Image 1: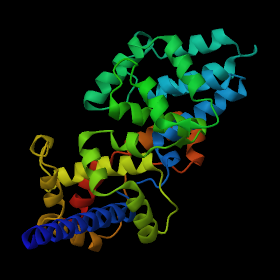
Image 2: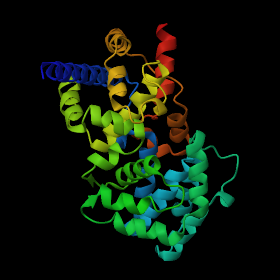
Image 3: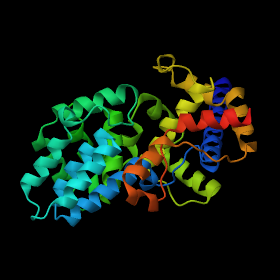
Image 4: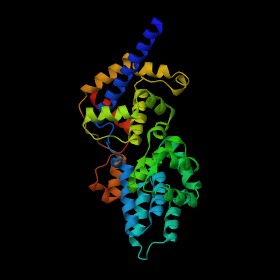
Length: 324
């Protein structure tokens, strides 16, 4: 009995150290600007969607159509294509109707997308989003628009529908809803469990550091208001990438069925050293944010908006290169 009590105390102490390490690292990444946004609307891809949503509404496109077009624009992530769609809207003189929405959605099909236009998706996500734009039925896009027009949008209910769309896994589904709802000015509710399920690593970290604890602690450490759970899920995903990059965490296969090993690595001396050393780093200006500069160039209205690219690992590498 005494041995069991000692083991339980050791597990609790280890969990507390892991939580402290992770939250100190996330707070430092926010202070350093490596995690560049404190609100979803500050992300460059969301700023682009907000500009497009305003242009669509000025032309009288209904809210369901606005969300359908934003969904395809999110999947394209090509500022040149966004600028072309906005130019098409400016030239239009007749009132908006269903045929306009259908024409705009057709513009996003890969067959109509010139190859020299740059997209800022990388890796597997790029392949999946291209296939999504090619395969998703127009009726499904309009149905998604109808679901996201409701006054109260529960993430779990709409997420199940999004995951039925072509090439939409847990990660891309949550990312799509986070960006499109922010671009359309909508609010997601009840985001805790679905957001934590974006990836297996994120689910493990959310079990170790619950979102409500992270929101409360980061508010105290950074002074910013409460963070949305979908934004915290993004923080968790990117922090895990940095911890993998620094050798603190191992490939996911080593933790499947061994969640205690995940906590051990987060409570380890190596993770503690990273949490301590990162506190001493000064904030550095990040030049050459390619996506942000590109959006500002082809979509002039974006220059008046404070936004930053979410390429966090690249920012971390630039910071380390500048300091070491």
